[in-house]
Length: 272
Image 1 (cartoon, rainbow, N blue to C red):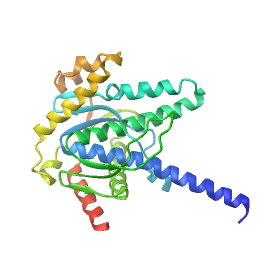
Image 2: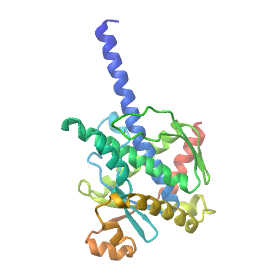
Image 3: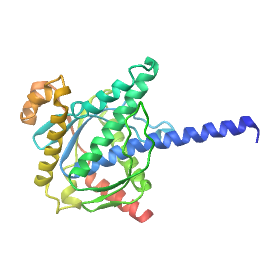
Image 4: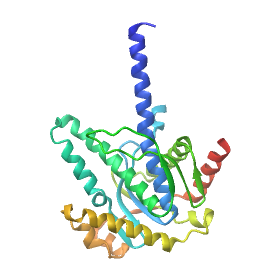
């Protein structure tokens, strides 16, 4: 093998490893959202810029931008919930060339989002273990889940998480494509059927309280750094009144995730 071939192989291997790593970020995010949706948490997501799958590379999971989190009648602006993490990360990239700042900002958003969802799951009793990863100076260290269990689910390898997360990610993408909405249009996704189909023993009221307490605590920690008061103004307004106030009509999507999640969970177990 010539030096050129060897170097090219290294580049190809690196590119493949990077694709797998980036895809896992979207897979973990979607699995975490799906698990939270089992407990009645709803997410307003912004339609990604790239939805259609033109080739095999498109099978890589897309990162989903969360606009809002809804728990019962409570509504939280997600950007405010991760304000501290993003704000601190911004301080480390002030001296970097503008051409690279966008890259680091996106990476920090991905990490902060995944970390917040992970902490939400931990707050209601899920057991997890994390993969060992290197810390970087400019990017928030993402908590990469190696295994997660609780409330009837048990995924003991990152491959299990990757498989299920990718299929959930593809389901989100297909729902966005079917809706034919404009790019970055907010869409509300619900998962209210999953408890009755798979986990009838889960108590939504108790978990709602735990999740809301977690978010309030996190929001209070951010409060002194948050300049926007949108969340404070809207937090106790009923959902329908909020929609009228903002003059936004969200498309309510019942993805029938209960049956879908059951199928891919069974598929994952049979594949072990």
